[in-house]
Amino acid sequence: MGFLEVLHSLSSRDVTWQDVLIERLKSGRGSATKGQQRGRFLEDFTEETVREVFGSGGYDTRCRFSGARGTSTEKADFAIPSRSDPGILIEVKAYGATGSKQTDILGDVNRIVAEKRRDTQFLLVTDGTTWRQRSSDLEKLVKLQNSGDIGRIYTMQMRDDLRSDLASLKRFYNL
Image 1 (cartoon, rainbow, N blue to C red):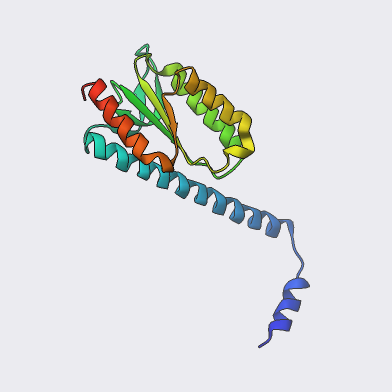
Image 2: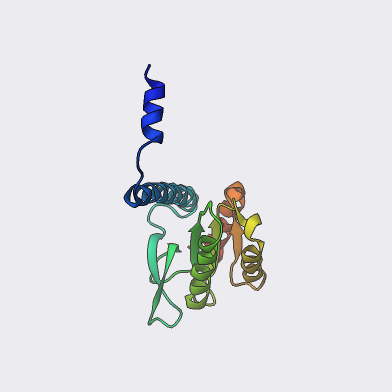
């Protein structure tokens, strides 16, 4: 079958820095693509739940919402009923990684908390897969929830809770 010859040619081949960099680039793109797919899957999951409660036109997606002072904006995955007058903001974060990506989540969350109106409810949906490895970052998110800056933190297993809470908020805000 020629297996030994192929193996020998691969193992005796000269490897250049260009080869190493190309392989690193390939593997980096692969994990970045997987992360994007995981994030998109969680966004789609969340949007399906939001649509069930508010209907197709009852929210804006992947937008910049008007801030508390009306002079600046911040990004959020969902603004309900609209980006110009959000009563509910939802941020979706799915990272099957540790380290800086989870710290980035804290930065995104803190910017939303700083920009939103006090009467705007802010919810966070996360995959929750690696938070045990970064418990200090998770503790900071829980502290934000306990202080009222985040209304609640959800995972995919909490879909019924998310749906129920959104329905309650819909009634509260008369949406």
